[in-house]
Image (cartoon, rainbow, N blue to C red; front, top):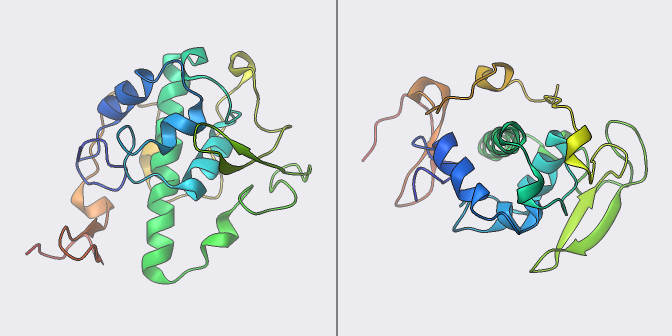
Length: 185
């Protein structure tokens, strides 16, 4: 599971991409929130990652191209790293929200749609203008707000495992998030 955990240093894009792809008949919002598919993804991360990828939460996984699927995984990983860095440093995470608990879209200022969606009826926030229900017309737009890691700006299709100097790490015993140079137990 460590290669699938979006918070892990051993996170593997190819394993995560394949795990999501196997959920082909499910909506993206359900596949991302399934802890057996992408452990560590919560509701905030789901909403913001889907916004960053430009995809509507109800889009079925089977509708996505391989490139779109990789992009969703990258945006999910990127927002997860931002989430945990904010939590660790005490920075205000809500300043980075574009849709979650917002009344207007952070990009186009359209009214945000809020509904219960998916198998578990989790609250879902999305912008009908910025997030397409038809993935064939979606062009990848990397978010300008997150400049945490350089891999989001590269056209990587190969597997990527973050280097220690790029990421904090969580203690498996107490879940404390440590600096990259900190020694393990």
